[in-house]
Length: 281
Ligand code: AMP
Ligand code: ZN
Ligand code: FE
Ligand code: FE
Image 1 (cartoon, rainbow, N blue to C red):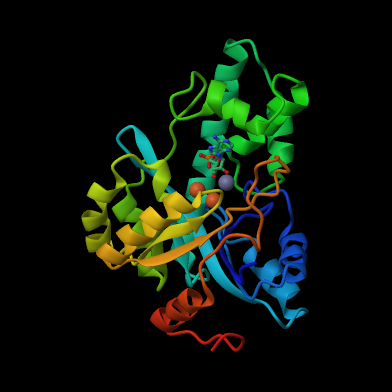
Image 2 (image 1 turned 30 degrees about the vertical axis):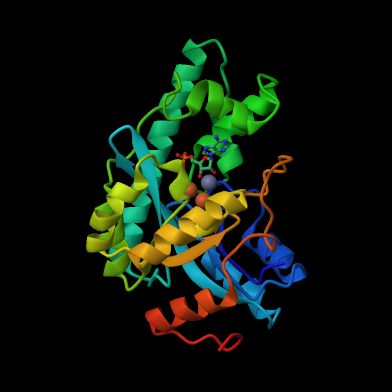
């Protein structure tokens, strides 16, 4: 078991557990340091911090996951120790979330044309006021009986090159990194294996302010982890990671407590951010 998980989602974006439920699970699994990293939202943090206060063994790093576009693909940037009280930052997140609603509506329109209609109201209901994402559309397709698991929706319809995909905000990785460093956060590249030729992009991302990349991630096999460890070491990036748990309930979903960086990495991040953890120092 591991003690650190730096990539977790709640109902404030496309996770299925509320912040309180997620913190309960993390405490049960004896995690010590976790980052809540919802897509384009920090709205779960207050509730998560309150829940964690009741279990004195758990430290929470305030985080975010921002989606950015590159030609033909997307790159996700995590931000740790962000000053999420920043009003300008919250305004930008609000705009990103509004853009998500428009884009989801576009995808739902395309699905109807393709003969697999889902109810827009149901998609919004599944998002429950949080950041709307493709997993909510996928879930509504599962409910309709079109597919068995959400992954199939991505494979057949709403994946990057799928017939019902719609583009969202045109944020560049460097812009996302700037947003995070602008509020005192530490920007980290998420799931690097999902991006072709990611190594060639690292110099530019580092120049923009990237300080780490995910290495101990999700269901990455040890061969991938070892290769990523070597890249991170060579590039001087802090090897981070986590489960990217959404509580989807799919058979192959990575679970908190089973994947994440060693405790020393969390200590390094706390030191870099100039923050104190009472639990791990
Ligand atoms: P969005 O934020 O709307 O672009 O949706 C991206 C989210 O969908 C990711 O954060 C994952 O949670 C989920 N996702 C992406 N690809 C897949 C896939 N192939 N199967 C299942 N979920 C996926
Ligand atoms: Zn997600
Ligand atoms: Fe991601
Ligand atoms: Fe994620």
